[in-house]
Structures are given as structure tokens and as C-alpha cells.
Length: 511
Ligand code: XMP
Image (cartoon, rainbow, N blue to C red; front, side):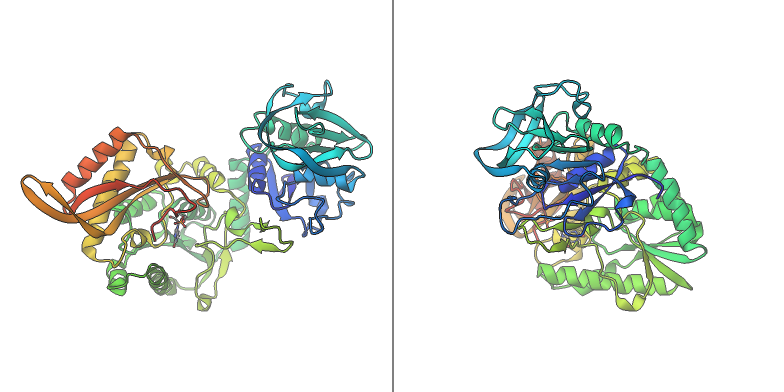
């Protein structure tokens, strides 16, 4: 890659990924590495950022890496714990704070015309989250700014391009945070902001061409954003040598198999649609246990995919839509010094006997970057903006055992809900939405008749990554209309409820 790179050393803060995203929003490529695995080839990085941490630098098992090869050598910015550790490491002193500072604070500048603070103004809001404080600045440090409760809120080390801030510039509540990151990276460290989606596409396509030559690649399309964007990049690089397989497991949304397949064909992809609904539903018959349902679906998917891949002569590569959060190595939040790799539903899972090489063109990107890359290739907005949908599909939204009739009911209900969200311009305001079919009947009355029919749940959540989520405050008028439409249009349903649980303690899916 010909672009300047920024290294973010992770000390386990919940905000580390957010730092990487903010840096990338400046069109600068950044990588997260755990503090205890500092890359040996530091020459590859133009600047270094030290993240926050749940630890205290005063604790015996705190993270104390050797910064000698970095401080004074590379432009360096310490954030929160990073700022405290920089002080601790360089002759300053960190102590427990008398007044813990969480949330909003206002920054008062101590220096005029300081390039690090350019474009921001004294009094601007910053976001704090710390219980230790820097009591004594390190040797040769110059104070840049304070808040009401924190004297040493920002400092630099004279004669170096080393800066430190007690607040979090990466959260939106720090109103000038992005400006400060830009000042540090672009103006002070002179990192070139040229990592754009277009540049990513051009370089990735060139790399894929060189890597794959005339080899054949197989890829499983899911209808989701990641696999679709990965397919488009590979299609640009190797054209017909990319063999896409789109499996209908019978548990997709209403009409999704045919409409998405058509869309893929319209994009010029070499795609084969395989309708294996009956095989999936037969295997699932009588099974109510959520994990067993998931396992059965995973197993049948592999069998179907494997059968199809075996029909492609001389295929040597398997492409996957893995993205950066799936592979990122991060320090565990509990503070253990060992780095743990986050596991994810979509990583791995393919049988050994396939013995294909793996190619993952999106593995350096965050989800929003995948969308921007897709947009820069002219891909359909609706496809790029789709809500996440679980691999096992409606199977984990039909509580209890699965039958064709239950799938039909849920597909109809889900379609009324999702189409309603689109019509009311709410779809893009929601991170994920869907309907759940409960295994209970309730009494109702339609006309003069007593009914005894199914109950469905509507669920809509806000989230950034699915790890935590909150239910969405959808307008009552909308819920009223959708509930009415569902009960009037979908035979077999007489009651609609809305799920108002957040995650944690609930999860997004009911199974
Ligand atoms: P939960 O229910 O764990 O869901 O709060 C978090 C996110 O993960 C999705 N999800 C799955 N995705 N296979 C998948 O591919 C699964 O088995 C699975 N279970 C949950 C869920 O839709 C949400 O986006």
C-alpha cells in the first residue's frame, strides 16, 4: 500500500475502534495493534496514537510498554490512559483524582497560537472518562489546556512532536475532537490524507489481479452488504473467474431470493442461485432448540455450498466478506495482558476438505467504509443500506419448531413491517428490524367470531455494532398502522406486540 499509515496502540479502551474510525474519516489509514505486540517495522507508520484503558497506570499489573523506540522518534499522541502513561513513563506523576471526571467538560486554553489547538476555541466541549489524573507533567512538558477539574488536560513535550490529552477526541461529544486529530496527524505529523474509497478500489482491484491471475474463485453471496461489496471488487478484478453462489435456505425474507438474485445478475456477476429450501426445512423439521437449529442450518449450508463449489472445475480460492471488526486483535476489557481475538458468527466454519486458499478483500475495512467503497463503485443504495440479517435467517425468529406455514406467516408479517418502515422513511433510522413469531396463541375477536391465533413481536433497534443495542422509539401512529395491516392482511395472526428491551440484558434476536 502506498499510503501513510497510523499506528494505534490499544490499551483496552472501549473507544479504541472509534479512534481508528475517526482517523479513517480523515482519509488516513490506521491500524490497531495491542500494546504488547508493538509492530517491529515501525518505519511503516507515520504517527502513533496511544489509546485509553480501563486500567490505572498506578496498578502493578497495568500496561507499561517500552516507548523508547517511539517517543521522540515518531509523532505521538496519548489519549486518556495514553496521556497518563506518557506522563508516568517520562518523569511525570499520576495519582488518583479527588474529583472523578465523567462526561462533559470545557477546555480552557493556556497557550495562544498553539498549532495542536488550531481551529478549536477555548471553552469548547470535551468528553472525559477517568478517575486518575496527571498530578505532575513530565520533563520538558508544556501545559496547553485545562478544564475546571483537571489542570493537566492537554500538554506537549518541547522539542518533540509528542502530545497528550486527558479527554477523548474520538467521541462526538468532544466537539472539536476531529479537528485536533487532524491538526496532529495532517499538520504536525504530516500524514497525507489520501486514503479514499476510490483509491481503495483501484489498489484492491490491482492487488487482486496480481494475486489471483487466472485462478478461479468461489464466493457465497448472502444478500448482505459485505459479501456483495466483496463480490463487486473481485468481479472488477477477475470478471467471469469469480463464481458466486447464492443459496436459498427457505428462511430468507419474502421474495428476497428472486429479487436479490436478479439484482446480482443486473450487476453483471457470474452468479448461480441454488434453491435448497426443501432440504433445509426437512432437516429442521421437529427441531425447537435454538443452537441445534443454528448448527443444522450451518451444516446443510456447507453441504450445499460444497456440492456447488465441487462443480466448478479447478477452483482454487474461496472469497469471504470478512471485515476489520471480525479480525481485529484487541486487548480484553477485563485488563488481562494477553490479547484475545474476537470471534464472530461469520468467521471460519468452512470444512477442511475444501482446502481452498482464502481471499478477503474487505478485511481492513469497517462496515461504514464497506458501504462507502460500495457507493464509489456505483452499487445500489438500497443494497448498501440493508439492515444486518442473521445467517440462520427466520429460523431464529420462529420460536420453537419450524414449519413451512410458520415461515409463510412470518415472511408476510416481516414484509408489512419492513415495507412500512421504508414507506414512513424510518428504515435508515433503524439499525436492524424484524418480526418474531411466538409459539403461543391468543384469543381475539374478528367480526363476531372468536379467534385463537398467533402472536407476533416487532423488534427495531439502534446500535453501532450489534454488541449493545437499544429499542427504537418508533412513532405510535406508525405502530398502530403496521399492527392493523398485519392483523388484517396476514391470516393466522391476531395480536402484535412491540419489544421494548435493550441489549444487555436482552439480545437482539429472541433465540
Ligand atoms: P444478538 O441476538 O446476539 O445479535 O444480540 C447480535 C447480532 O448478530 C446477529 N446474529 C446472528 N448472525 N448468525 C448470524 O450470522 C447467527 O447465528 C446470529 N445470531 C445473531 C443478529 O441478527 C444481530 O445483528
